[in-house]
Image (cartoon, rainbow, N blue to C red; front, side):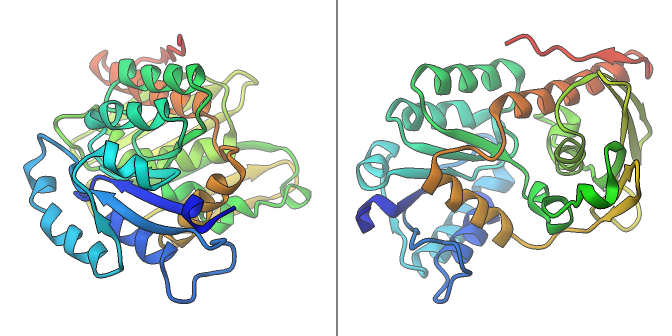
Length: 301
């Protein structure tokens, strides 16, 4: 593979993840496994509506330029220079518009969480990836913490359930738990796997508590926090033993997972599972609106 084939493009310089992932991948002495990939080009536009994101673009553009990244004027220009793309804007409402040209070009694409800002856009991304046979995945960085990636089922035995927690601040333009709570919810699904059929949400001004029922009668729970000291973690409950999940470990584990995906073209997280996570969040939204009743997941694609 030529070096040009290992060029990575970034779309959306409105979030610090663009800088963090570029720093990890373009490090002078990168961690073993970055496979000579480098972020070489970026298209700055991210959110069109979130002013507090838009104002970050000049700062983050300057930061990636200092790491040798060339700024381009359009996604079309970007796609002429790279064969894989990282979409880093945190505003899910812009993701479908930005992802479609990449998918139609058949380029490998990582979409930073959330996959999209609503169910229709998420399904449209899934269908486009299927139609164009384009490798796409989306994830929170918390899925790749070492305590999840290195779960030893010889020690836990069958995983019977899990509890996770994370900050859960809201962004008014998105479903409430699609903003920050998605980190802890992604951790829950990383441990439990897909197959959740219903969710119940208890919500106050400062906290959320979700109880999910899986199709095999396992229960997984999530606690979201908007008051007190925030953090990430949880517990895995196994037949043979329980395991404590560690906290955020920086962006290097996610960067490595992205690069390995670009090399193999095999997504480490299936888009169907990511859609289930969004369905879980939307069902939790409905549960809150109905006073905390259990709500089945809508997984219709």
